Image (cartoon, rainbow, N blue to C red):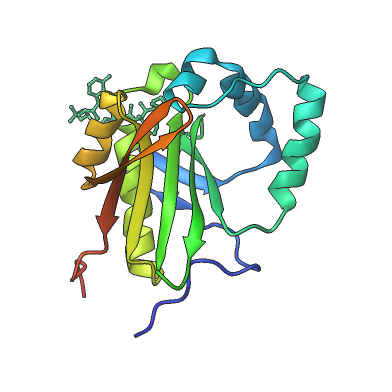
Length: 185
Ligand SMILES: CC(C)(COP(=O)(O)OP(=O)(O)OC[C@H]1O[C@@H](n2cnc3c(N)ncnc32)[C@H](O)[C@@H]1OP(=O)(O)O)[C@@H](O)C(=O)NCCC(=O)NCCS
């Protein structure tokens, strides 16, 4: 049976529940955490991003605009199972011809680093993608010195597939392919 394409303008991202983390669609209340994470110098450095300098009011205006814009991406908040917002996860650059998408993840709340939330969020989303959509490859970019992140991605089944330079930043490209046979098929 042909799986539906991942993206449809009328489709909201689903709620995905893992064993430690759950992924839910982004909402405007996430702006407070997102603002502090986007200003956090260390978090930005780990993601090759520039910390934002604008006021919360300015941030919120564009945040809400972005939230309701239909774009070819799926954006989720990562929560603990009891509903604490600890990070973000997204699929973007969705290419329906090549049947692939790029993913990004960030656990913003340091208290939850290296506790299994990132890998659970990734594995939960991959299970959904590879069983419910027609995508067959997911890839990501991570800074070449961010070994902790690379270990997490390797643990989830990603393998290195290339390198990329952007300005002064050197990235490793990693990928995972849809398994030939999924459990239950
Ligand atoms: C990278 C990130 C998503 C990983 O999520 P996480 O919840 O911290 O990672 P997990 O606890 O699921 O770790 C899975 C594996 O990654 C590795 N790992 C994670 N953090 C590590 C650390 N501090 N040191 C060494 N290995 C680490 C381990 O191999 C671990 O497996 P194990 O627990 O069986 O040993 C998260 O730490 C994060 O967002 N960090 C800050 C931002 C960042 O680095 N962003 C870059 C994303 S490209």
